[in-house]
Amino acid sequence: NPLSEITHKRRVSALGPGGLTRERAGFEVRDVHPTHYGRVCPIETPEGPNIGLINSLA
Image (cartoon, rainbow, N blue to C red; front, top):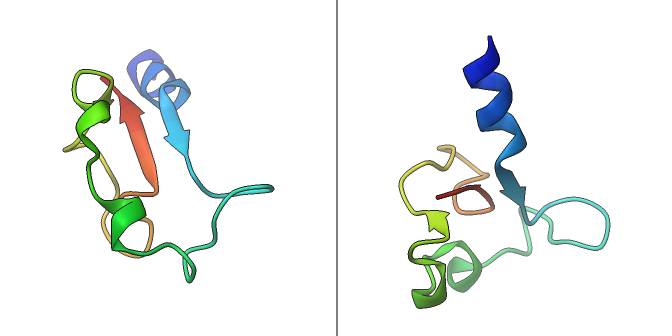
């Protein structure tokens, strides 16, 4: 699916090498920062333990 491929390429993650772990990420990291408006979509984030850690570009 071409649309799914484009959506996947626009994802930004705070997890991984040099990043955060799900256990260490607090509410401040997961919350929407005012500088994210217009750059990161505040709605399109996964539910569950990755909420706010994996975002999509606007």
